[in-house]
Amino acid sequence: MNFLEERITRDGIVKEGNVLKVDSFLNHQMDIELFDQMGEEWARRFKDKKINKILTIEASGIGIACIVAKHFHVPVVFAKKSKSINLEGEMYIAEVESFTHKCKNQVIVSKKFLSPEDHVLIIDDFLANGAALQGLISIIAQAGASVEGIGIAVEKGFQVGGSLIRNLRYSLESLAIVDSMNAETGEIVADLSEEDSKELVLPGGRGGKGNSHFATATRQAPRFAQTGEKGIEKELILELKSLAAVGLSLIHI
Image (cartoon, rainbow, N blue to C red; front, side, top):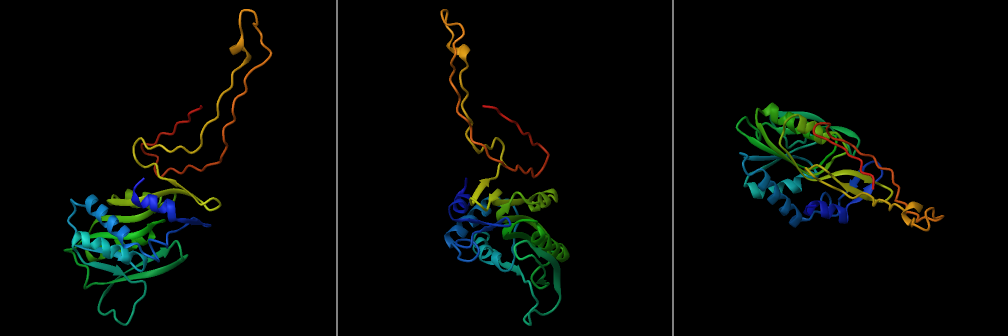
């Protein structure tokens, strides 16, 4: 578990409707030291990429992107969700749907700030269904620029966005991947995305000993046995992001 996953486990709040609230440190009140750690980690992961610009979307991505940009020494451009009187000239426009706000918006970037010479790193706070990322990718494509990578703070692994973006062959680096959430208990289960990853969900029971275990030469059919200990029962939903290279084994203890 990395630094961001630990923080989400400690301070994140799960709400009904697969909503993960991280507003105490990520997208309302902002922990700048945490953002700095995130920037350092993305700089390490994308160190071999030629990046000269960071693109994000208003509003929650802006704070993270600005701190991250310090590690790449590049400017930040953010896509606006509404056209203001301050926007002049020609625009790149894409339509995106917000998972949290349940609405569609047009996002806009001035053509002055993206060009075919740009090598862009996309930064955002959340990845759910991938609509916002597809909108930003569309804007970069309209500019003739290149997507060098995508950095996401929190990916909801139980939704389709991550698989969709990876299937499009983009270099996607999510610092925390949440595989499932339980609004009743607030439980967040970590992602099993790495090879040999393991997660103890429930301890197994303990088998008993039948009467034959206590048999002796003079007591060949004892009329007693040792009962076992019942295991804990729980219903879980396992969601596979991809069927490729996935093996699922059931182990009986």
